[in-house]
Length: 233
Length: 233
DNA sequence: GTCTTATTCAAGTGATCTGTTGAATACTCG
DNA sequence: CGAGTATTCAACAGATCACTTGAATAAGAC
Image 1: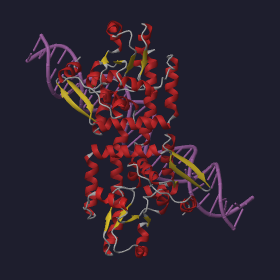
Image 2: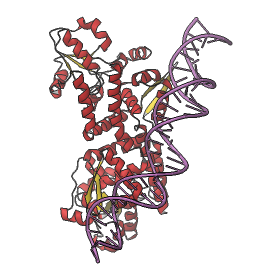
Image 3: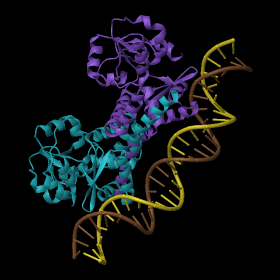
Image 4: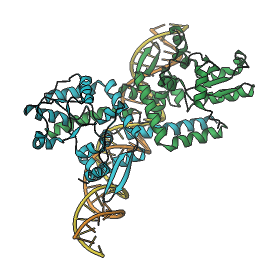
């Protein structure tokens, strides 16, 4: 009867470990991070994470076996999405733990950002306040699908590749704040560089949509039709 | 230069995966769970988790390499402890995710508890209210070291093995609420069975110290001397 | 100094995991 | 129906992992 107790414990912790195993491979974490930005097809995810399609598919099936993501067949494509908001919160918790416990995270990040000449680190909270107050032009520089899935209210979708062509849409007199997927994403950095070259007062906001929502703030979504159109682009 | 970006991403996710890898083995999660109850020696942890000492030591070193736990040499023993409260919060987040996403958790638990004749499931919040209001006698039935490390304010330490001998310390007229390590621990169940046989109105509270603290409520700790005494018992 | 005890180390085994490759499946479109 | 495409499956190589065993280390006790 004591061994029955052991078996119970073993099966409980085995279940918990399903979640742990799912996030024990770097590439799966990357996929999960991407999926927290919005639903994606296998091919898109494979491209973004630098994986072969077959490999990405396998990783996604591991995540699905742990019920962290769901797959839905959409015509010729299979769209994967995070199974629940709680999964994103868990991802943030894990990332936060890694940030606070593993000095290597800050070290690697600082090294990379310094090499790119981006040592700014403005007072982040003041930036967020200005964004919330609507005092600045807010640019969402992620791919349009991700903007459609969720974006900061009032933000304009302008993927990095489009900035050059569409820069005239932005009033010169207003400061611009660009954001992307979060603190480890550099798309907003590129955007800021470009905007500054053109004479704009531009700054990068570290927070992405995920961090925004984690604070309990509302996000906007595109209309249904727009999402559908975006996902087969 | 694009590959430089890839290398940066890879090293960031590799860091995040250190945390994931640490919690990808069931036995390591069990050790982490135990450590969230309080500091322990290698031998004690090995015994509680059903591991050989050498194996437990190896798992603990993996957890330490991920900076989730810390080791401190105390004379002949090595005491392991959780490196930070954030680690406990992360453990709770992972457990919560497993509970909400994996039906197997509830299923396995229900099966085991039903077999033990414990299908009660009283209104948990009402029980917690009565505990907070001091309306009941609260019994901490975990090993004394864990009580010393942290316990619910007002609780009496009475490990399951001691209950028979010390049952007279409990006033018969007052209802008794027993708790242990949390929802998957059965020590409080055994205590409740024993107490009911002796004519007490006894109930099990699912929440343990960890869940109590997660709600932002205070816990009590034993004096320094008492902790030291307990850890070499 | 020698004995005892807690912990760690080192080496080995079987299992599991990641990523590759090429074929199979399932769906759309003409 | 047949062609084309996105995804999955199956089989494999190499690496890593969990656990065991027996020896080594380090501290306290006599």
